[in-house]
Length: 247
Image 1: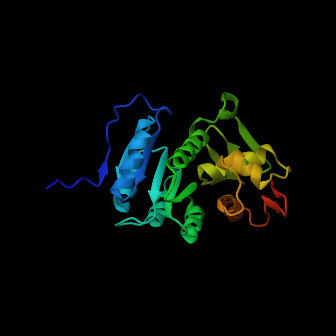
Image 2 (image 1 turned 135 degrees about the vertical axis):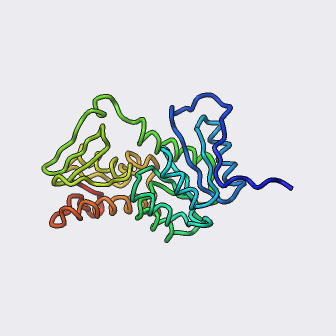
Image 3 (image 1 turned 60 degrees about the vertical axis):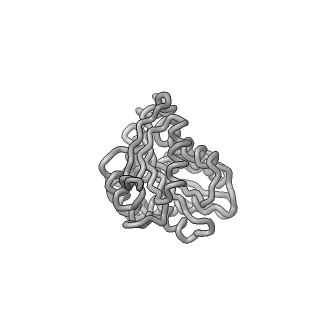
């Protein structure tokens, strides 16, 4: 009889140094075949991978260690993925890609509203997963020039410190996900311009626009909500019907 595997494993990669130096990814997935297949592909690409097979241990690991990205299944034993994400967002802004069942639109919307950065419906193409991961890591870790890294953007009472990855409104610090920070930076750098959905999908989400994809709407809605908590009398990000959004 095979000995039971621990709920979390942290395999030592035999491959060269990570393509993105220091990138450490956490996979929380109870399907052993799916989890290990993803882990093998990402390890081959040079990422450092930690695995968990249930939500409770996944949350502990996510809070205990520093990860650059988390792949999170929704249907998990001991603690479901949405509950895990909700508790994670109370303490960490680690980028999260949710793995959902095909057709589970309500779960995807709920995940995005809680703070997920992206999602993939099962069964998914491994190449698409890799592209999504690379895009988020590029956006959150490596897509800053030296000048951008040390700069601060300010519009009236709205401030964005790019080096610290922190934003504030009327002196109150905002708790934003990496995508929300990227959205806010894009709007602030192009204030008063009408930015189309197609442009924002390419610029911020790094994927092609689809009228069936509501992820951008959810991220903007979340950002608006956080701004409105501090300044409810003004809608800083406005919808220009038939065109896009503007700050």
